Image (cartoon, rainbow over all chains, first blue to last red; front, side, top):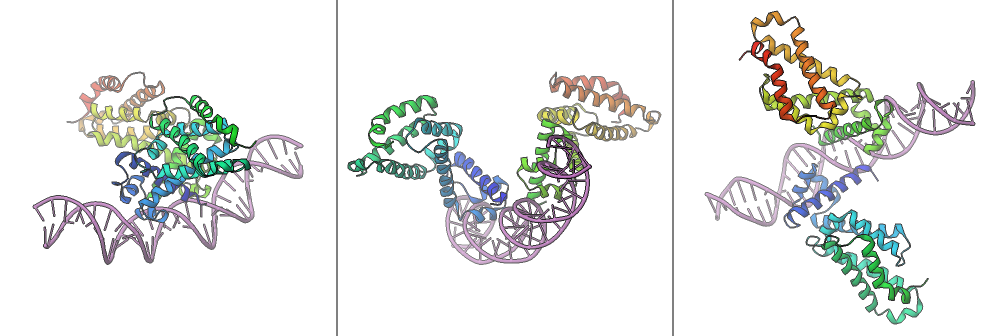
Length: 184
Length: 184
DNA sequence: CGCAATGTGTTCAGTTCTCAACAGTTGGAA
DNA sequence: TTCCAACTGTTGAGAACTGAACACATTGCG
């Protein structure tokens, strides 16, 4: 892809997130973004249909980035190293995910992340045939909610414990299920 | 001017200065700059004929920025506030001017600055008709060298005293001449 | 109410930048 | 020496971006 496209989109998203932190989604205008980013207003429309689309794409982008850091670092199975690298990535990009998870992101980020994680959990569980009893969804949503809850708590409380600790604790909480549910 | 031009030139210059600090002028290649700046190599040639030209333009730019901060803040006459704002500006952009003044800039920056200041001094002196006796150039070069010497000393020794102090001391040193030479 | 100010979304001609290719130069290792 | 790799400087076609204009909607102020 043309470097200009990458750069422009990155610039627009960064500017958008800055403004999101400053004044909230409602009060942001396309003109604001263009002015702050020092680009032509029309250029914004070349990439996004409106600011709602921009929010969507933004969320999509940062959900993917988060997941990539999970997939890159380890097998998708519920290994400690996979969780650890997720939390490391969150720590590194704290301000962004704090923003997207809490007030502004308006919950869209959370629900998008929830869906994807739920699907992954479903797949992981589904691998082991004798897990059929669990496939009614209860287990999936229990585990997904638990995981996201921990994640939100950690971010919204400004990382009250370090990456090592949160990983260990999470693994401890998941242990009964990793043993039973995951095929090795 | 098209915003793209401003942005691109700024980017190229910044990247160039970074590389200058890292590896020195000789070892910099146009490809280096393009790669680091994440732009097409051809784009560099759209703005500068080669890296020597880039160095020239860079020096020219930062000499002008320095002088603007002098002209903006006060009358050109040798007032304390003019000197003060020059040193304030230098302090704010310390790393750049340290780089340009010392090793790499290869003396070009110094001599460019010298010429301009010498010219200004000549003009200031020339205003008072009875200064003709001084117009042989000795005074001009004495004062210019003195001023630039102080400036270089201050930068190269990483600002061993604060802006206030250096300004006061410089004014003290210049006092005999401001009294005699400058018309009011 | 009128109306001025601000934002939206679109269009178009013109400019800048990208990408890929080119031939030519240089420096260093085999 | 020869060869290879890296850098230079240039070109052309096409894509991205700019600036300026446009009609239209919304807001809020006198």
